[in-house]
Image 1 (cartoon, one colour):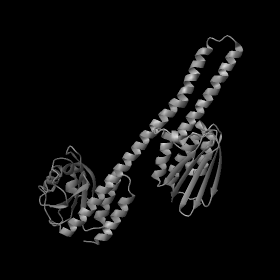
Image 2 (cartoon, helix red, strand yellow):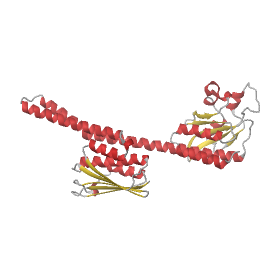
Image 3 (cartoon, rainbow, N blue to C red):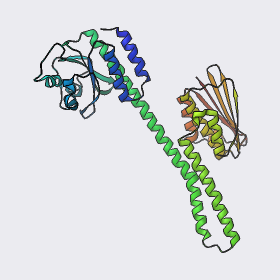
Length: 366
């Protein structure tokens, strides 16, 4: 057996970087086989209804891979049954594997034939995902230290599956919230403008005065232009083209899009990791939206200060302000900014008063 700590370290480093469940499974069994004396491995996921699915495999014997992996995809076996009965809690020797027996039936058995395997449950707390099976040529019994190693790897895989699933759930939640917010924005802005255009156009049909008709069509043109600007702003929020050119460029472009003059200043050397930069852009974008819609001013200031590992962002305006004690819990804009700040491990604070403008202060470490 190779150095167990080295194997565990390499696998842990690999798993820590993975974000796709299926790519992770394939990669980890490749690492396991390439860095140990085992010859093959395969992973089977088992759902709550007891149905199993072959998820990944590496260096399967030709016999086991025959007929499009029929021996692994169909039928049942001891390890799947034990898993379904909640009787498989640790790495175990499989004395007789019905799948290997079927694959080896009517075939010549040699020293290189894989006839037995170890099986490892993939678990994370109360969550149960499936099994990892490992086999080696001319090996019938797996020693306790081998089973302990496989059990540790199985635990790491189970924990990684759980982490990826939770991250995906969080992304789905954010997507739903973003859709709901955009739906409200469409209703409150573009939909109202289109309704106004419809009413005005309908009324124009009864006008006889050339001057009144001209004024009406000018109104329709103005409202239509505003509606197009609102739509462009919403589309930009969905896909902020330009962030690849840096945060400053993206903010300036967005401010121009919503017709807001922004004064930007930077104190220190600008350095923000890409993942944090994307969240920070969304926060600033939301803040500028609020200025444009509620502050009754067309100007805002953004100051970024970099000092060591700490970053401070201040966004302020000289608009009408508001009483912070009157902020409603359902205020999605402020809630989004606070949640995004917390997501990057930062602190969010807002100060404002009527007729005194508003200031948002964000601080985080990089």
